[in-house]
Amino acid sequence: MERELALEVVRVTEMAALSAAHWMGRGRKNEADEAATTAMRRMFDTVSIRGTVVIGEGEMDEAPMLYIGEQVGSLQGPEVDVAVDPLEGTNIVARGLDNAISVLAIAGKGNLLHAPDMYMEKLAVGPALVGKVDINAPLEETLQIAAKAQKKNISDLTVMMLDRERHDTIVKTLRRVGVRIKFLTDGDVAGAIAPAMAESGIDLFVGSGGAPEGVLAAAALKCLGGELQGRLMPGNAVEYQRCVAMGLSDPYKVLTMDDMVGKDDVIFAATGVTSGSFLQGVRYLPGERAETHSLVMRAKTRTIRHIQTQHYLPYKQILKA
Image 1 (cartoon, rainbow, N blue to C red):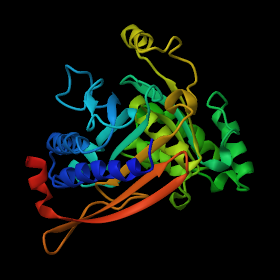
Image 2: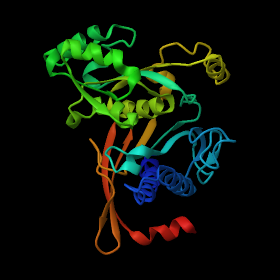
Image 3: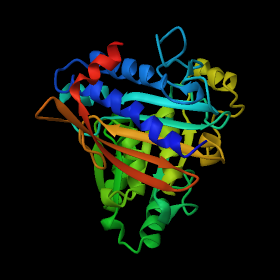
Image 4: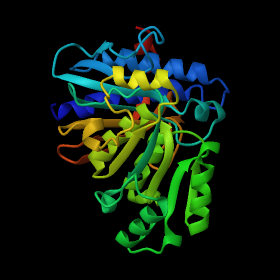
């Protein structure tokens, strides 16, 4: 993958974020998601790749665009796997809350895991804890290792997780040992990335969330020098067989970074729709302009770019073309 591709793909997430932000706080999550998906799909036509969607809006018969297996890009350039979430946090946007983003990851063909749409147990950490923790270990042990490695007291650790009833047992454990908990209403891509962002103040991300989101987060963490360990959680025989059909002979195995995003280069891009822990949301400015804040990273060079862009609002005409 060429260096210039990183700057090409950020335009894709920018346009999706701009389109979704129009629906912020209006209580209409489906419209927000549709706007982001349509904008992202159209902008992909301008990107110099021969891309195949491996994580997208659903199977071919479930989604009109950005479906799994769809070919995207100008069909000139490198062959790549594409993982997208045009709007991570549809409920967040509808309710006007924080941490909604538009996000994508690109890697060489055959590198991104075709993650089925089910839950994944996750443990995400920043660079200081890479190779030192194990998703199979008791949580108390993991916290002790994290505290020691970062020269902190356990009571000074902050753990992030989705606010879900299924996490009640984890919450009780965390409360018992005395760590801080920061809950997310939605948006576990941003949550899993947080431990690798020094400014977030988050030490670990734990709990379960969507498997496709786990792959997207793993792509970001590879660029940031962090780590995500995952384990799929098929809820029934149908989901188990779906994993097998997608090439996972042991659906319960611990998935490493190499399993999820491969050993080669990865590009990750995200644009804020609403403001969050590491991205500002879309801001509307005088003179028919809007401002976006994006993050684009490349694993091979460990380049991390924050891009603030002002857009002239008739960009909507481009989407209708």
